Length: 317
Image 1: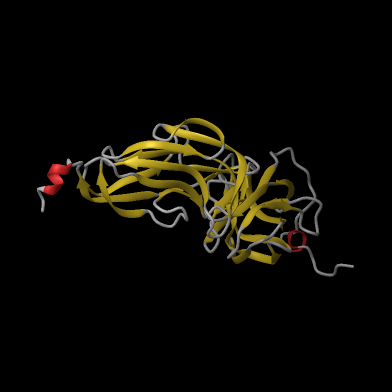
Image 2: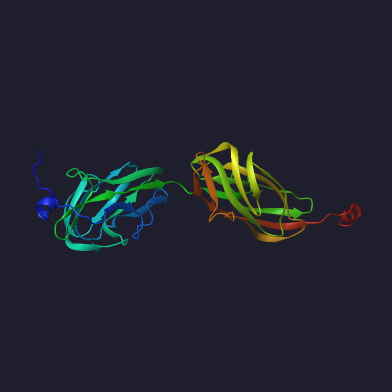
């Protein structure tokens, strides 16, 4: 049988009175405004999270709840509003605040600030505010020590590498800078690939912005349903998923280009967003879209060879 007093019952002397007040919410958010309940980031970084109370219309004197986590990451710090605290976020916490927090309308207030970290990838780990073990539901208390049930919200954490889409000068997807000879008869091979995705890639959406001194002779896409074109914006739904893990890239397009007789230094070939999207996108095999980084490739042409007749060639000797 439990021997310790409940914080809300013992310290605040909270009653069991009911109220017709609005039902408050308690949830984990990744901004203080309470607009982002999904964290999408990269492994190896520390991210801030906030336990926010909203829609309670209370002068909040305390709370009791627990964060039920699917895990995959560490909470490296847990900082509560000043008060008398029993427990922790993941085991169940009861807090009586030294100074009440005014929370009215849709103006969320933070009762706990956490920092999360993972060195490895996490996909869609759910975090749900549930009842502290001493209660049937998450609870809030007002400054008069009256208890009110609250709704616990669910958020999610996804930490994964950001995919990259780039034009590469080698089929292994490692070189984005190249120095080549030019000329009317010179063909420059390139490959547009996605890398660093750590997923089975099922599609992509992006646009290629190319220096006007470079002409695309042919652009062969991977097998799939293709809408649009490279230089105006292309959306690709692949018939066969591309395994893009570790250092292995996935091929989206094979290109052949010419620079004619133009000389150039660090001419840019940029992967940018398709006009219908805010950034380059990569889709996984579940059709979930992920924002990608578009890379900028550079081409330098040091010799713009011209076609010569046999007589012109002989005159050089």
